[in-house]
Image 1 (cartoon, rainbow, N blue to C red):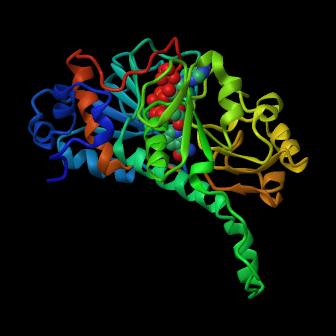
Image 2 (image 1 turned 180 degrees about the vertical axis):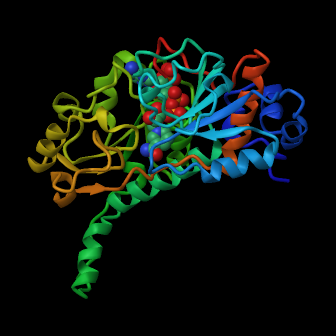
Length: 348
Ligand SMILES: NC(=O)c1ccc[n+]([C@@H]2O[C@H](COP(=O)([O-])OP(=O)(O)OC[C@H]3O[C@@H](n4cnc5c(N)ncnc54)[C@H](OP(=O)(O)O)[C@@H]3O)[C@@H](O)[C@H]2O)c1
């Protein structure tokens, strides 16, 4: 059965009853009574985020659902639930009967940036498929770097067999520093612990996670000094914007590697280029950018020590995450507390 067992990521974070509810396929299929004719769920996404897969999955779970896709909104008074991926600021205030706004992914900064946001609860996706995908990407990025695979690729291109293997540090000598020990960061950290790396993490509040040395908010410098590889998995908020800058980089050990899979606005790009070009940083792997798609003439593309991927580290899988969207739709319609609620004040 597809949703018969509760994925491990949820076990830390939600109550048992909530989990059963969230992953119960049959509850959703049976749950038709609550919907009336004038109730619709609206998807608003960017052209690069197709909603076809989402519509297919939510319809599978509840065939009678009225699902609309922006700009085909029909009567705006019908819209009760909006699923947003970068909606136009101001475009949601026309929905007078709106009960909830959900992000299509884990991040919500693009929702909170909207100055005309209706005063309804905001939810986000917390999903095991997002975690799995992020773990895979980061394990690839870290191992590719520490095992010096770019250099071996160059040898391969030249059909050149190195005289001796390139020197590499052992996993136990390398500390992976993770900024943000939330739903993603803590699981990523555990994966690196399992691979034998040292792992430390930095978060608003200190955590107690086996194998991970946790640093609280006021201990940023000590955390950075430990981190041979720095992974950013912070939400984008007023406090975290531009957090990866000249000063931050200067606290990292010489030769440190920076991986950003959170948001482009966490990094001051010119500071990163300078720190890499001057040799203080050993390189960087970037999946997210201030402006996406990354402009064709952006210096990141051709920098030999900066790896670029097109925001693909972890994409929400509709098959896995559609049930929680519908659970929240159901909860919003019946004024029950939402799953994966966002704290507007904190910004995540
Ligand atoms: N590139 C992609 O494809 C992709 C995919 C998914 C997600 N993301 C990004 O990853 C981010 C993280 O996702 P998540 O689900 O793990 O978020 P989350 O569960 O909300 O966790 C956020 C973590 O950051 C910490 N934090 C927040 N503000 C902080 C601050 N000012 N100083 C220190 N620590 C701070 C929090 O500390 P506390 O635990 O103490 O509150 C928490 O540990 C998302 O917001 C999104 O932008 C990117």
